[in-house]
Image 1 (cartoon, one colour):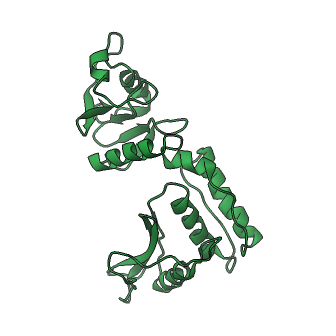
Image 2: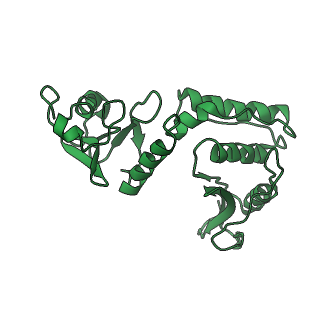
Image 3: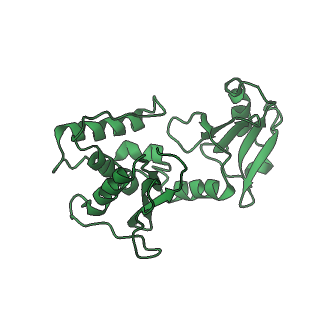
Length: 251
């Protein structure tokens, strides 16, 4: 580190380039109180090191604080970047993908940037409550004031179709790669799978193809299992799929 920027606990390398810094603290340390330290390290590279590093706006893009049981991460490519708690430390290939995304679209390098420029919602065939729900979720994603969003709709109001519409927009325009749709009843899994399979994309009315990996749709087939319909986006195509898990009790 340059003079006045302290000493980093760890430098993070991806593809032989310095891309981030890790501030390590003992178990029990409140990590929110040490964020300033890692931020200081992120923009404190010596000139000879900076030449071999990946920087964004003059600083390392990836900043971590970790205590062994807790990890916080700041993605410098995000607009209004701030520390967020992670479930686990990212794999090198995940960080490499973030870098590739930023190189491919510097103006909108992350999904948090992309959701700020989503196209207007095509309201054809949508009910007023569905329109309000989709716009509300997207507004929440843009504002980033909360970690979670909740849609509460009455029975028969079209919750599943609303979710499919939202999933399509986030995958097509919002930089999302996969979305988990979780249900706790096998009949709901079948109902949801049907909604995904019958969904017609706005504008051209096309029906997304099946999974290109094996050419077929996976149906939940065991009684007592929990179905998890999901939607994946890859290389310009979508695929609907479900996975199931045996359980020894009724959900």
